[in-house]
Image (cartoon, rainbow, N blue to C red; front, side, top):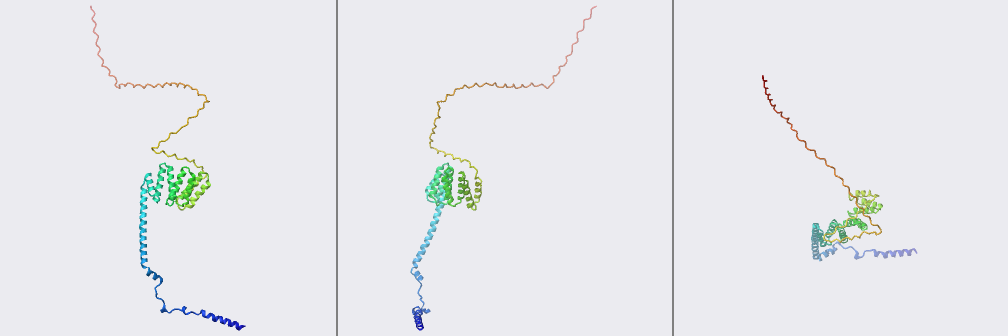
Length: 315
């Protein structure tokens, strides 16, 4: 039995040995027989050398063209900005906004146009211009400022719901103006009597932007001190002045109501006004005659004539 097991084990080992021995094909080649043919990469370079050179030249040309075109675009943008900056009147800004529509310069022209319209008491037109800006130029660098300006105009015109919406959008932009948008949202909440929400807006402005803007904490603290203080009644802005040349319609005034049941008021004659005599004016004193300071000169005494002698008596 044991002999049979050993024989089977021995036969298995003998059968495995030929498999572990290296085959003639797997034996290492001698050093002198290493292949000296070029590698596949070198062969690719040799076969496509001309194509690679042409591709390199085309790439260099494309880079140069990109630099030139980008420089021309930058120069064009600078020229557009200079033209918009040179515009001073509403007509000029409207022309620039229409001519450069779709560019940052066109959006800047709309912003400046809205500012001039607001100064000229064209409030509805200014709001429409800013609404066009925020809808047509969402990628403009001053997009957040446009939202805040639109909200500010709506706030001043009494449209609080639209103002809160656009202030909120300006806060979401995380721009420099977002801190003041939070302050204005707090002011609206305080005006509505919601001091708790107003305090939260002021705290957000101080905590989120206090390290970025130097004065925002002081502004937030100053507005926080007004919590609990009754806000003054808002005065609506005066209506815009009529444009010259436009004829104004006459205002119709209803006649005053009359009450026929009331008796007519008797006419009371007016009392005569007593005539008060005027106070007599004192006569001005007459100037005294000047006194001659010289004393009178006495007259020379006349000599007395002696009396004639009497006749002698007769004897």
